[in-house]
Length: 160
Image (tube, rainbow, N blue to C red; front, side):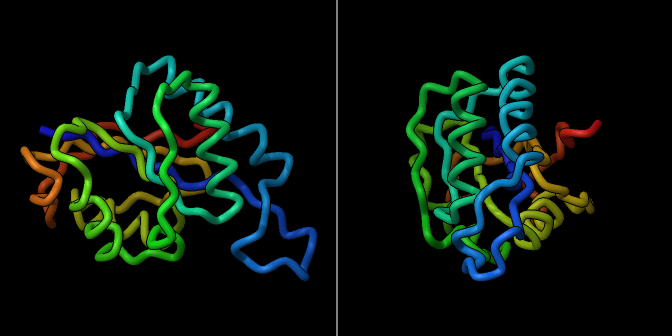
């Protein structure tokens, strides 16, 4: 069994209309909710062995703030495929994870993350910003990740 943590980036700023989408940073709300979710992760003893993040600025900031507040002793790996990724692309990224990793966290974007949850568990969950889904996968190797192989263990929104 493997565990997949899916974290949507925290709330981003739209203050500068000249910024490319990729370059949008977190706004004040996001800068508060990301560490809050890190604290939730810490208190729940969620311990991903690896963090894979979109390299978009808002996702990077979220991953760093969450990692620090959750006291995760892992390096964050940035994968360009996670930016605007479809569920199919997300599956491809997951399938490449080393078999020795028992759990991973993806930090990314909608609508791909919602689609991935639906694909893996059959459940529809609205991934508001900084939401966390924890999915237990009935697999031994990450390359076995496929439709309906998971069960949604928990779902946490920062405002719950």
